[in-house]
Image (tube, rainbow, N blue to C red):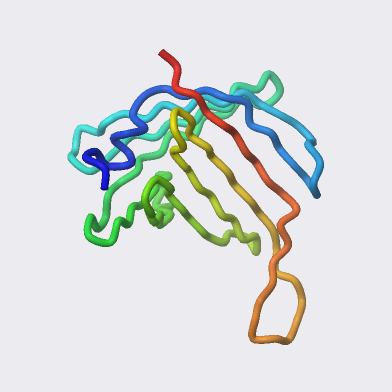
Amino acid sequence: MYAQSFPDRVVGTWTGIMYIYKEGSIRDSVTVRLTVSKGATPGTWPWKTEYLSAKMPMTKDYVLRLVDPAKQTYVTDEGGGVELTDYLFDNKLYCVFETHGVLLTSSYELRGDELIFEVTSGKKLPGDSEVLNYTIPNLQRVVLKRTP
């Protein structure tokens, strides 16, 4: 296994272009800067994502917090009482959640010197089966490179 935890290995500043897909086609793109640092409290990492858009700039200032080292579970604390549960497998952090009838998946994967961030979203399809199916019309994907 790794000597450092996944969040410790991604500490630093990363940049890349996020491509926004709808139904298989690129609809937009935006420059993204992710800054991960070690928190003042052990087991916490401030996780700041900046969407550097001229039209709609946005900053998401979250904190990633280790919940259970044995199970490799984390929480992304978005503030205001919103916490998303994350699961780490090897070098990839996964999260699945639903809000306002929309199912979202997000992941961060450290692959060599790249950090790949993806978010999919969709809604439940109608059906009477015990298996629920969801659409995935939307994808946001960015391959981030560490900046000096």
